[in-house]
Image 1 (cartoon, rainbow, N blue to C red):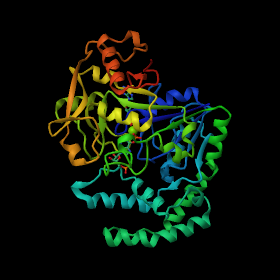
Image 2 (cartoon, helix red, strand yellow):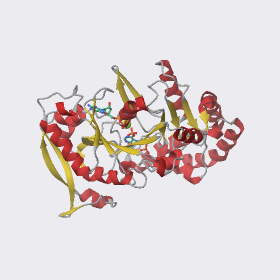
Image 3 (cartoon, helix red, strand yellow):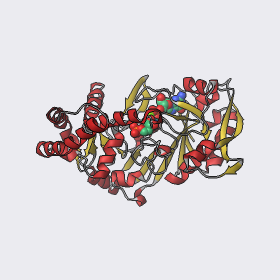
Image 4 (cartoon, rainbow, N blue to C red):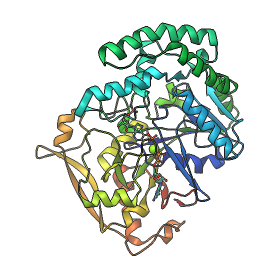
Length: 424
Ligand code: GDP
Ligand code: IMO
Ligand code: MG
């Protein structure tokens, strides 16, 4: 039995989808346990680029069961569309399963996400405006609608009417927005329900049976450690728990069942949306990383903020997730720069600190302490598939990262493709 979690160690977009696609070759099940269609997971193979938002990244391999578990919030319109697109490209959707306990993103969640962002003005969080925060808020408030309700027309109608009055009052009276029409929503959503019903079931029983039978189950993280509701740069975070512990509640798996936790990181750092970013580079080097790494959001198309690799963050992520291995991407990208930096520590008010501050004002005053590395500009490493073949400078850089984080590097990405990975 293996239950392997793949998590982001930075602010998302580390390349989690790519590793799920690669590792799913030897897995039986792939499970999404948190987040929603705020995620955008890119997979590139045979020259085709796929961007998945809700369906687990194992769907491109034949014979794998892909599960959207209870911890995910589902926009049914997006899911129906994603299923249709994947089917059109010849993928096998019969093995997709959706938790009956997963919460549904309703039109008022999407509307409120935008209205709340607008009302925050320049203090906006930079959310994806997909309704994620409001949907999780309703889940916690106990007024949410679950998939089990969506596929039961009477229950769904009842729940829409139980919500609509309050939601419209907030939309109209607090934010000056346009109220929503309950009947229109019911008609539209029951159409999605019809299409999604065949996939909806008690997925927890299926996950447990798989583990009991000794199958390999991959848990696909969305978002990342520093977007975690509890441990990220609050309030500039998402509204769920993407860290490995999120698997326990988001899929109903006991902590002792988890056998491995792989942390994905980029050889630099990116962030999309607002919030503190100690190693951000606001000059032409940051622009070069953005262009070389194609750092534009998979979900919203926004240019991602770029900066140096921050070992303080990744070390903290190693602890929070109990990482057993690292998957490092974009070694090809940093190799093209004139030289490379890694942030070893933070200086706060002149003193070196060894923790990640919870106080955002303190975090904003932190200055990065860098170590500089030679790059390997003259070598194209994008087709190298063995560690031994890498330039000396690249090997030295990788060994230093392992030493700093204290976790072995298991895989190194030298390009976006399925085959552009070095197994260590
Ligand atoms: P995810 O959300 O963690 O799955 O990551 P995204 O798909 O949003 O962003 C990762 C981006 O980096 C995608 O465009 C990938 O195709 C790309 N990528 C992943 N690994 C590598 C790598 O090793 N080198 C390069 N050049 N691109 C990579
Ligand atoms: P993947 O899985 C990068 C960011 C948003 C915003 C904050 C809150 O592709 O790594 P939300 O819509 O979740 O309420 O927005 O979180 N964010 C992500 N950034 N990658 C993601 O997912 C993200 N999902 C949310 O940009 O700053
Ligand atoms: Mg992404």
